[in-house]
Image (cartoon, rainbow, N blue to C red; front, side, top):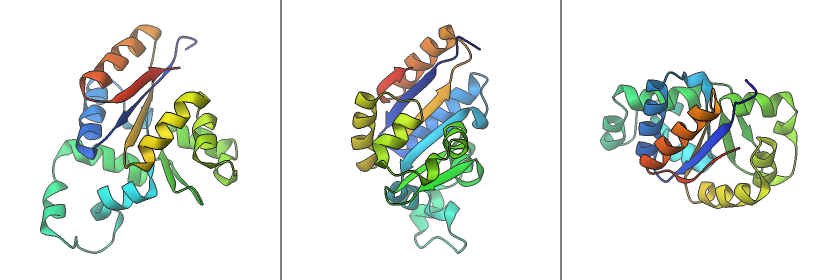
Length: 168
């Protein structure tokens, strides 16, 4: 897998991120191949029903939960390898979370940018992603199986509305 590359893209909405996760899975990846990064505030807002043990406070929230597409993104966030970096309010789920946890980055101080750099994202891009995450965006990352597939994933994420799509 020397050709493997991390492809990342920032989505402004949960709906757009869910559509991307669905499309990535249709390309032969599993939810275990997909990393999701978001602020703790975004997780609490967008995934309130999945993360609470009691009924949704609003009927609109309950209605938005149905459907297989949303279930995959929620599953990654809820039951995947997930860490919360205290003090910076970042929730990381998926393979990047496992790598950071294994490296001891979960307890590291260095802020959001440091966590993103630890995930393999260059500093200049980490600064851009940090701003997007603080504004409520959802960052998706997937380790492409080949350089050719990385190009296709990059195009796919762009077509689905991701901003700042790059491969490392």
